Each structure stands twice: as structure tokens, then as C-alpha cells.
Length: 158
Length: 441
Image (tube, rainbow over all chains, first blue to last red; front, side, top):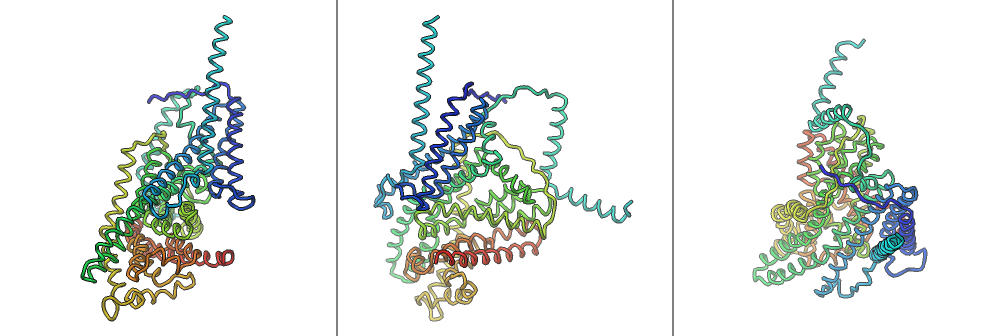
């Protein structure tokens, strides 16, 4: 059976820093959600689910575990980054589905959905993933642009 | 040198053990032996290619992260099951309410009551739980089709081996999320007689789809903000209790050395919509079939017991045959705070776990109150949790008892399964009431 090899960057320092930032962001947001849900800090809108906070911290631990191998230029680090993204995407996708079904209940004027609004379902797992993807997309776009510019400069110098 | 009779006994034991080993395991052992011999002659280590499946396994089977990731995926599964089904459940409820307004206008009060309170109040009510059950089966199918479910067994193997259990036991336990009968029958794949028996005995402790309606109802009524999490915790409690009980059995009545787990992990796959929906339908339709047969018959019987009393039809529900029967057993459950209505539900739950909630719906419907309103007014949140725990752990349903009898081939072990679960359910529910009472009342 043909098993295609994965193409991952050879140089992993920048991905390591990015992974560290993502991991820390998930850890901080997850920590705040846990503290807020336990009423140890003033309540924050959308930060009410204790288990949701713990799940974010688990995702953070997956990202953070990948930092060390990435700093050593070990490809194994990308496995943690990939699984971190998959888990974050899973929670994001789930929350999108929850919003869609709640919107359907609100649209049909069902009793339990009359007071529903989208902000009640705008949980950290949702917006964290949006930030994550925006950040990753930006880094990828900047990297691409830099490669193109550097490539042009190299061609010019030749 | 050993005397001949002792040698004969040892040989007999060895033969018995050989007979009890699953042929699939013998085949797998042989296959790996052949593979090993070929590799010894031909394999030369080189730089291997790293594919996505290896990449995912490096993390999903990680020594420390494997279990937390498994918990995230399980939580996502139950969140998906509960949150997404709510609106569809409401649609079905509205439909049956509309049908109920038509049937209640039938001039004959007996027929009107039978159709409205008995059939619609019972089977109609249980059919509102079709969406979560189908969603649960869809989620299980997706996990199976991706190849993650077999990895989950691998993740748990490390913990189960430490506890003296066989890692393969976790696969039947996971199947128990769908149906306990399937879990009991899947325990055939566990090698070793006592390992297999331990797996059969603890399989019914896993939350099957039949218990889901009661979790959804109680969690939705008493803990609406955290309902998905409560359902998830009930499923986790089932796993924890199964492991604890299995450890106790392995350390006391079912002593046997654990063998290592041999498992082929296929590559991860992207599940197809056709395959996943097909699996969901095949499994989910069994629930509809149960609702149309056993539960329909059960709802007619329950309606008869609730609507009739010593003076005939139309007596107040507190004077009905159901109340009389329920009050006979109710004192036993007084420490748990269960009313006679709940006790009747639990008795009927022996036929099928779905019948617990169906019975409650009929009893309260005949009494002219909606189930949700009745529960809030008559049951404390602590008793509600105790009820969920009791339903999780108490006697398996009739079909599961039949499967246990078939798989163990022994009425003694079947009776033991029923009795120990009843005692376990009662004890843990009582502990919930006592310990919870110290903190929350």
C-alpha cells in the first residue's frame, strides 16, 4: 500500500514559538474559565462552564507538549500541533452546530428558545479557534509573502 | 517429580485453557509469529516514512495525554448528543401534543385515556428521545469509522493492565455505550475464562442508549445549564464503576493473571457520510422497534394499572393498582427518597431501561400532570442524582440478563449479576444521598 510521506517544514523554530503562544493562550483562557466558573474571580460572560475550561487546558497541554520537540527540530512536535488543531476544531465545530440548532429553535419560536441570543453560545472554545485560525492564516500568509520576496531578491542578486 | 494424578490435573487445566482461548487470538498469534520469522530474514532497518496516521497515534496514544484526549472526545460526543438533539426533541414533543389534543376529544373516555395517556403519554413520550439516541449512534459510528475507538481501548489498556484487568475488556465496555447486550456478547473476544466472566459481569454497568432518556430528562429538568456535562459525567461514572467492580472481582472471586493485549490498529480513515449514517440507522432502528413492541405493550399495561383501581376505571392515580403495587415496594427505597411512582418506573425498567421514564410519564399523565412539572415538585435535585445513579447501576434489562445467561451458560452467574448490581445500585445511590446531603442540603 502506498503511504505518502508528510511534508513538514525543515526548520521548526518559528512553529515552536507559535505553538508556545497558542498553548499559553489556551491555558490562560481555560484557567480563567475554570476560575470564573468556580466564582474565584469576578464572573465573565461566556466563562461559565467548568468542564469547558478544563477541556481548553487539555488542548493547551497538547500544544505545549509539542514545543520541546519542535525546538529540537524534531518532526514529532508537529504531531502535537496537528492533534491540538484537530481538538480545537472539534470543539469549535461542535459549538457551531449548537448555535445552528439553537437558532432553529429560536426561529421556530419554541418556548425554551424565545430568550436565546447568539452571544450566550459565544463560548471561549468558539472564539479561541477563530483567533487561532486567523493567527495561523496570517503567519502562513506572511511566511509565503516573505518567501516570495526573498525569492525575488535572490533572483535579482543572481 | 510430580505424581501422575497431579500431572493429569495440570494437563486437563491446560487443555481447558486452550479450549477457552478465542480462535481469533490463536490465529493472530500464529500470524504474528509468521510475520516475525519473515521479518527476521528480510527486514533491514532504514529511515521510515512518517504518515499522518503515525503522527496522530504519537499523540492520541501518548502515555500522559492519551487519556485526557480520550475524555475530550467523549465529552464532545455527549455534548453533541445532548445539545443538538434538544430542538428536534421539542419538534417531536409538539407533534405528539398536537396528536394528543385530537385523541383527547374522542367521546369514549376509556379509549381517549388509553390513546392520550397510555400510548401517546408512554410510547409517544419515549419517541421524543429518538434524536439523542440517533445522534449518539452517529457519534459512535463516526468514532468507529475513523479508527479512534480501537485506539481508545489501547489507551485504556495501560490502566486496565495495572489494575489486573485485560485491556481487550475495554472494547466490549465501549460497545456498552450503545447496548449492553452487544457488550456482553462482545466479551467473547476477551481471552481467559475469568477475564471474560469479569467483563460480562461489569458490561451492564456501562450506560446504554436505553438509559440516555432518563439522564436527558433529569439533567434537563434539574441542571439545565450543565445538562450535557451531567450526561457526560453519568457515562464516565459507568466506566469508573465498571473498572472498580472488575478490580474487586479480579482480586476476590475471579483471580487470574492478565495477559498482554494484542491488537491490530488500522490506519485512521475519514468516515464516509453514507457509512456513518447507515450504521446509525441500523442501530437506531432497533430502538424504534423496541418502542413499537415491548414499550407499546408495557405502556398499555402501565396505563391499565394507573387508570384502574379496585373501584374500576377513572379512579385517582393515588388509588390505582399501580399506586397499590408501588407502595408495597416503596418503603425499601424510602432512604433514597424515591416515591411509589419512581419505584414503579424502576420495576418496569427491568423489561427495558427506557420503560423507567415511560412509566413515570404514564403515571403522571393519568394523574393529569406533565412529567417535568411533577418531577420538579416532588423530587429534590439530590434524589434526582441518586435516581440517575441507581438507573445506571441497578439490574440489567431482561434482554441483557438473557445474554448473560447465554454467554456464561450458568444461572448462578446470571443471578449473581442481577443481585450484585441491585446491591451496588442501592448502595451507591444511598451514598449519593448521604454524602450529597452533607454538602448540599
